[in-house]
Structures are given as C-alpha cells and as structure tokens.
Length: 111
Ligand SMILES: [Mg+2]
Image 1 (tube, protein in one colour):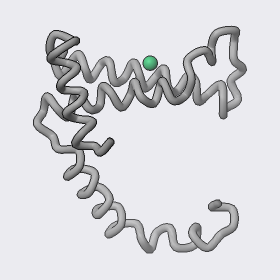
Image 2 (spheres, rainbow, N blue to C red; image 1 turned 120 degrees about the horizontal axis):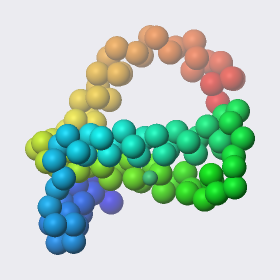
Image 3 (tube, helix red, strand yellow; image 1 turned 135 degrees about the vertical axis):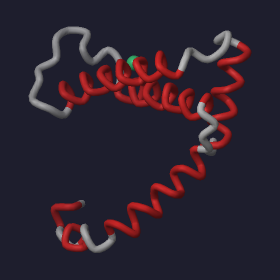
Image 4 (cartoon, rainbow, N blue to C red; image 1 turned 120 degrees about the vertical axis):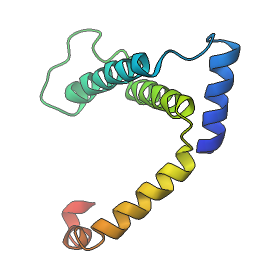
C-alpha cells in the first residue's frame, strides 16, 4: 500500500464507517494520546521502566498504527499530500544532514 493509497483508504473508512472526521483540534489531542500509548510500550519494552501485568498487551505494531492512523486523518482533513510531504522531508534532511552523519555511517556502532 502506498502512502496515497493509505490516505484514500483512511478517508474511505472515515466517511463510510466513522461518520466523518473529528475536528483537527480533537485529532491533535488524539495524536498526543496515541503517542503516549506508544511511548508507554517503548519505555517498557526497550527502556528502563518495568512492565506491570497488561502493560504490553497492546503490541508495538498496534500503537505505531494508531499513531499513523491519526496522523493520516490530520493530513487528509488539512489537504496534505503525504507522498509529496515526505519526499520534501527526505530532500530537506538529505541536503541538511549528509555531512552531519558521515562519521556515524562509517562507525560499526551505527549498525
Ligand atoms: Mg493506541
């Protein structure tokens, strides 16, 4: 599935199943909420926090997808083409950071 196809599929679901988009402000809050849920899993799976029973019931892929879902909703309702936006972001980072990470690319620790 391409990014463009993902945006269309989320838009289809929102209109056919979800009853329309929440407001941009609500979705921004929901993005923050989902990011927190993702952070909770990361802190317990890769960080120093110790999981309580049930903490890891929600898998990392599920939380990543939840974040992506709301991000796509925000893109759709603001008329943002994520394919164009990510291409511009890659170009910006490449132009800005190619020299910045040269030493890291040559270090075995980077792998
Ligand atoms: Mg979630």
